[in-house]
Amino acid sequence: MYGNASKLVAIEKTERQIRVVCRPLDWAQDNLPTQTYYTNVYTLTENGLRVENTAVDFLQTAWSDRAQEIPAFYAISALGTFVFYDGEKPWTGDTLRVEKDLAFWGDRPSFVLKDGNDETWCAWTDASGYGVGLYTPAAISLLAGRYLYDGSKDPNADPTNYVAPIGVFRLEFDTPYTYTCYLTAGSVPEMRNTFQALR
Image (cartoon, rainbow, N blue to C red):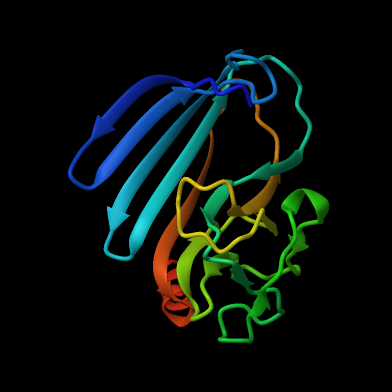
């Protein structure tokens, strides 16, 4: 919030993988480190990017279960159409839901996925249906929206599109919490096939 960077603890890189360990700052405080360590392992695969995220909390607080972003993902404004599956027949090729004019995510509730729906991928696409997809198997809902939408292709522009697959859990003292997500690019059918193969 104040433009400060989190503290990098370690970075390791190989030809197809980057591992980053950091100590994040408290988002709402000015330069205040948390008692949590994040480890992110990014692995380039033949289908896209596999990301393993692990959080370890060292604050001895009895947290309760709450909704968490797993992860927060931002796309350029030009990818302004949101696509996901919210039906009752996952991974059968059933009709996808397409949202073309989403408002700012802070002004709307999340899309709650039906019980038994494990087709928990989503994508931001352009008008032709080409875009970037995100699959988080542990998600139970999707929070999504657009900020200052103008169709810009500039990755540094303020307008952005956002989605957060949501999980509900708590962090336990000195106990790693890990989830995995996958990213790919392509047409909507290509992305759906890729994620189904990863299922």
